[in-house]
Length: 339
Ligand SMILES: Cc1cc2nc3c(=O)[nH]c(=O)nc-3n(C[C@H](O)[C@H](O)[C@H](O)COP(=O)(O)OP(=O)(O)OC[C@H]3O[C@@H](n4cnc5c(N)ncnc54)[C@H](O)[C@@H]3O)c2cc1C
Image (cartoon, rainbow, N blue to C red; front, side):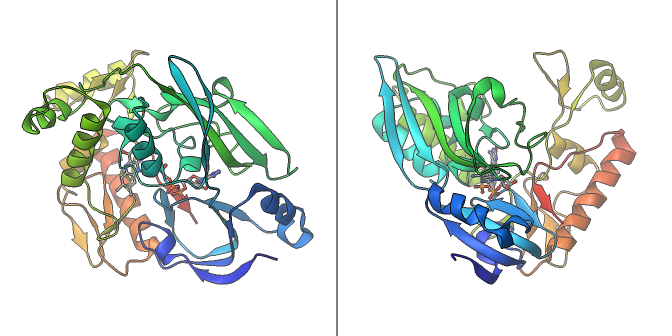
């Protein structure tokens, strides 16, 4: 049986927490996964699906079976004059897929360049960046139901995509293993440049004619300037989601804190930047031993080397408490906490 015991997860999560998995398998084909799931010993184990480990915090060892998805393949399944449908293995690196599409001039995911992790995890929290969300290019996915071993197809309406959210993070959490994702990319080049400093960077790069390659390059440049590289400093990107609150609450906070940035949403609610709230509570650049809050980006908690998952979790809780006390807002972690 392809089941390893007592495996260190240190190199398998971008926080570089030295937790252990009691059992571990690297899954390269769906049939093998189906066979393993039928095994009575395995059926009784708690299970955790792992991609690139870039959105996960291990607070302690995992006393069950860690299933790391390594299904490969980018397959063109359909095309017409406007669109291309790509069916992609869950284990393909997200950025590798972006590079593939940019090279072929398939538009739609260039703003999502350099997001760490795998294609199979992209639907889980509906990854997003620079004004684009994964759900905009999503066509369907195939996922294995853990309890039955049956492969089910999910269309967009089945997935309940929201801001850093999907049905796989809520009512179906832990019930399905995503095997393949099909994306609908466009031959029509529509550029999303209004978000953040993309236009400034394009101008600095002296881009004369917009292309998806130029946008991808600009996004990569911004991300490399702004975000800590997890291979150098352990982190999992934004630790908390940006809170979305009712308009009357936002108005009340604005009266008290006139500099509070706020972003109206289509449904009338207001999104607030969690980084601003955390910074106002004095956490930006905080460091205690091996754990801290990044000096340039208050939303990113970091492991400077050798930190325990428990220490990072504790820091996250202290931040939540101080933001709740000062602003009356409960920050919700974006990172999946395994405890
Ligand atoms: C430096 C940095 C920057 C980041 N920037 C962004 C950003 O701009 N936008 C953004 O949205 N995210 C960002 N992230 C978060 C992260 O990159 C994404 O959430 C990514 O999709 C996680 O992929 P993964 O393969 O590493 O997932 P993992 O961390 O391995 O898993 C995440 C969750 O998905 C589940 N899961 C993983 N694969 C599967 C599967 N095949 N089937 C079922 N469940 C599965 C896991 O059980 C877990 O609950 C960033 C992270 C880092 C470290």
